[in-house]
Length: 236
Picture (spheres, rainbow, N blue to C red):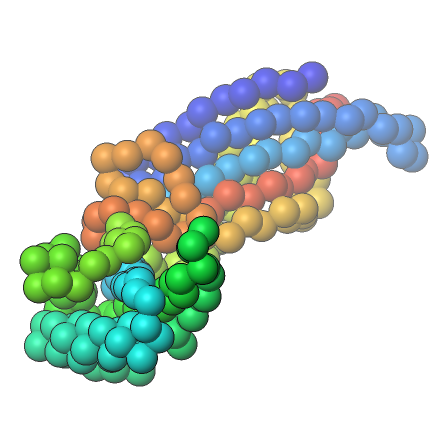
């Protein structure tokens, strides 16, 4: 038997999607059923970490000139990030340069040097300011090859997991007892958590959950999914 039941408990801000499967066994002359429930607990949270990255790349036929261009660009980029309020090696990192060498059909040298910049900061306002400023770097002659979207994250997902897990389990217990009663049964023995998932997040107002992060807004909904099993015994 398999049924899908949704239970919304507004007071606790918890939504449970319940998948129920039962398996009957006979022990000591008593028929019991094993019931498995998938539940999810949710809570509104504020993102406290922002991440984004971009790449600067330049090309030329003289390797020293290309190196000089990359060095000048780095100076301007670091200045842009620090003027927004970010600190190097704390809020952002300048990754090592990558040099590529090739030749044209007529044998001329082509040197390409690229350098990536990674921002991971709890200074949301400063990072947002820098992100907007980075979009204008090409106007200063700094060719940005790739500019990835800024995404928001929850820094301490473990605390949220610890908070939501018992709420999800308790709701699963409540629903299991209600469902067992509707079948003329009762729950016996302790529940067993067969699977405890990690925290996922989505933008508030969105419906797509992502693995704890990659959200576009600071206002998020954090959730955790559990798989809890119960034993039901037919009432006398």
